[in-house]
Image 1 (cartoon, rainbow, N blue to C red):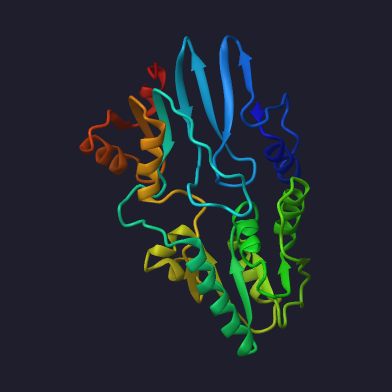
Image 2 (cartoon, rainbow, N blue to C red):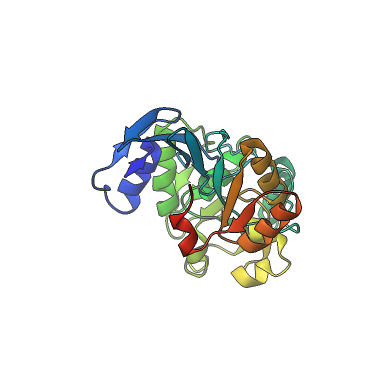
Length: 279
């Protein structure tokens, strides 16, 4: 297994140390059985990588999850060029056009301020790895006392080890939360609400663009902050890679492949038989 140092630390914390792990810094090439492999930051979360594979002078780029907008808790994306591109298309539909992060955090802080003025604890729900750290970093300079659920706290401490700068935060304990902003993973929403003072909840996700998001997640409101590329940024990514052939995976793979074909690209959604004929 080839991975970055932050990814290795996150895996060790969440699951177990992966066997036969090889740490590969961004931009450094390693040759394995005649194949050159180089990792580039994807902007999705700290340590997340795109993999550029070179065989006989031709290059294949696997994007993994990626984000083009800046992420305050991750390395900025670097986009290499390649003849063949395999890309994730989670939000590959034109309706997904994400607002600028600055505007979203203004909405989030205005909501938090209102909750606190009304004597309620604002609870921001995001994944413990990636989204939680991005939310926390975006609260810098707002003056809140921020409490972080234990699973998110551990991931945040690791991110700090790798140089990510966060505003002051503390580990949340049951019963605490009065006058604070609380960060928690979405799957623990119902559990944590019963252990907080009176509160309101908000899901923080790219899916917040869907009108039904707050009902689907069972929250009071929803804020559109994604750690993926939106439709426009997916197109920008393709333009920067300049591939001759594109395979799309995840989300709106077929829709986005069709859009690429309409724009003159050789593109198709990837299925199992296709994997044997990439070169």
